[in-house]
Length: 342
Image (cartoon, rainbow, N blue to C red; front, side):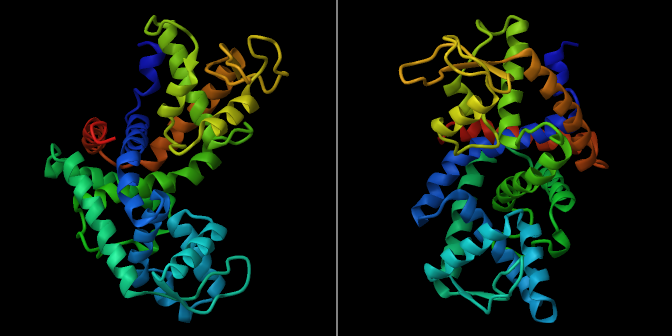
């Protein structure tokens, strides 16, 4: 078996990969829907998760607990930093969506309680309606059995990566609905982000976003080696469209990441950097349009990939091969149909 085929031969690795790709392919059509409500997709999805937590989560029980502990739980449950969560809660309150209770003190300072306003409840219902509309179109081919297995995989990912002693349930669409499965894709991918970085990137000086770039360049390198591409260089436009951890990354941000990992460009004008990436054609103004992984970059990403295989196996341990296969089938169907909605 070729090195390219071996890359995703492991069922757990292939399953997480299909989850990331489905999330990426859903991003544009779903963000266009929530934008109607003057929200970014990340913020809208956290808003829905807060709706679950108001009844079963730390805020419902905070009067009997240390406020700092409640704030810490909220960060762990949503995989959103305490600083960002404070900002989101304040922003939602300023829009008249939430009433916030007294704020705790300390490192994990956060409102001790919150209550949805009528306007906030309407927004929550509208968002679930948007999710249900899209889910009905991208999951129309999926069987009920496959959808149940898909939900089972997402549930295990969340239980292994998030503090889900306050597991969400009782949302308007009903447990196991297509809307909840769509929400589960975003939630489980968000939950994976922190553990993924901690468990696979130790000692590399890579972030998850930069590792994403190196993996894509490595895949392109292997395809070129097998004669599947005309050039060993990958266009930066195609690279940006292929990212699975940075769907909203601008061209300028991608260029900064590449520069940080790069060496000299074709003109020799760029000082040597980490040497993991090299550049081909450079447009006026120094804009990179092509990149490829170097031998030192390959060495780094191979070590990371070995850790990733272990990580994927641990996160999905105990799930049957058929359950994982069903999860991948649903994700492929989502990606295929979402492409027509972008």
